[in-house]
Length: 124
Image (cartoon, rainbow, N blue to C red; front, side, top):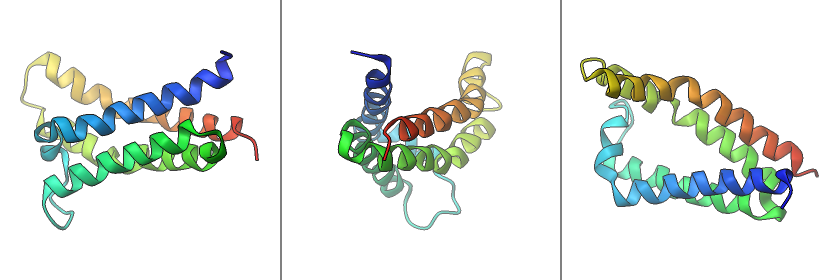
């Protein structure tokens, strides 16, 4: 399988795994939901997990890959406030935990770029 075919499938796998994790371990994600959002944190956790699963499917399928790549980039940008909240909330934790929380912040940039590259490589 060529690299051009592996990148979208790897992105779909990442999104799919994250989506499943939102349903399997929602208690990890609930505290990341900004309090400013209406409704309960669990509903947002499940909604973001469902969005990740839907975007994973869109990226995995060649017919919807172009739209899926754009949706993935938007999703990565949309969850950034949760990563900022995590970094702030974890500022008093151990050095290893802080490294994880702070490391998630710059990671969003290559994820967005990866999603946009998958979109571009899908053609029209």
